[in-house]
Length: 123
Length: 408
Image (cartoon, rainbow over all chains, first blue to last red; front, side, top):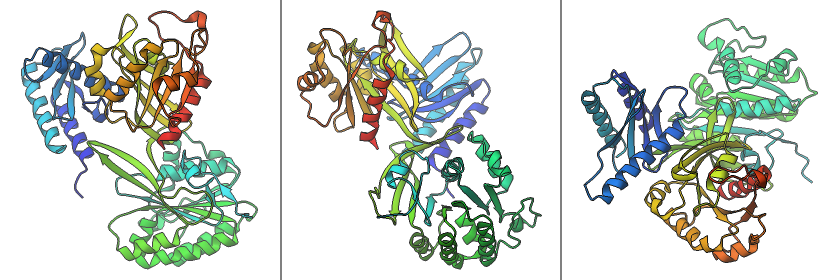
């Protein structure tokens, strides 16, 4: 039986987590609903999705106010992690939880690859 | 007068749709599409019946008895006392399939022979005729797979047994690609069919149950649909992934979300929501996520962005501030809330200069179809600037009741 979109997305997030230095990831709609997640157990995935979508949307709006093109990604750096939110098509964002010491260049490539695959799956 | 007994399933909304619940002697088919687990529905109904003192026979043909007990426990239900006093009995039709010795007191030696299943079931039901008996059959798909498609005609015999012994049934079925003839016969022989399906809405997969057949009279709502989610512990809940809480600045949106939720998260600065309030609540079998928007015009891009895909709207208005009413209407249009089930929370309704509910309805230019309900602080002396206020629970519950009844 062919995999459902939900299973495909879950598999994709699982693979992303297997890349070193990524502790978790989630895909949310632009309006803040959770589509799929692979997050540490104690994280409320719904709230995380809503807030990540808000963060990405707010950055997008700020940038479009400046008329400086399309927002590609939002990276927020915290004490114990980096949060990377990238565009995953017109209806979704992919957010990854990255370790603070990670080499962002390499990690970004993987995240963008996953975001592009998300776009394909949700077409 | 209709003397048929009614048995509640304790599955939210389903009992309403079935005009009270399952009927004596009836067979209800839980018709799941592949990928959806229908067993929690059966467990939940079973636990309710055991709780009310009925007896339950669980015919397990697709998994071990122990696996089923573990699952029931996983959902947070304790049926051990019922096993001890013989109110819950397994009829093991699985061990025989895998050539294992059954650990159950009652077992079908050759579960590939439907007549043998019928005979064992008949014997077991007759053991105690004093009680009503719910028979859970898990599952009809396994029956067809192992006993052939002719075995669906065996169900007619089981129904005769049910009629003679104060019993009724919930049968699990997964709709693999069977012949239409089998599916038609199954639909025919069942008194009620509840379909469990997943519908993809844009990108989100949502699970729904639909009552697609009901054979008994009464105020049944055939075709009635409700979105659900299985939670552990908890079981089957009606799932509403987004209710939008919107309204002008300082109306009390954050207070409503924090008072309703077990744990709410807000992005706020000096008491003003700047991005989003997010809260989750469970109430009367509903599992709901609340999205609260900011109120000021300068955050309208966020309002428009987060407004999508809501299933219902709570618009919060400050009863003492009629000047803000045009803004309420503007916000409802920006969140694309037109046509969605919506409700107005007339907050601060106990303050001296508050308008009445009718005045607010007129002020907003609403018809009578949108309920306007008052909400007030539990303790006015504890209201502080820049902090969410605790609101009266019974008023919030009235608000939810009114909104939920419009959504499903």
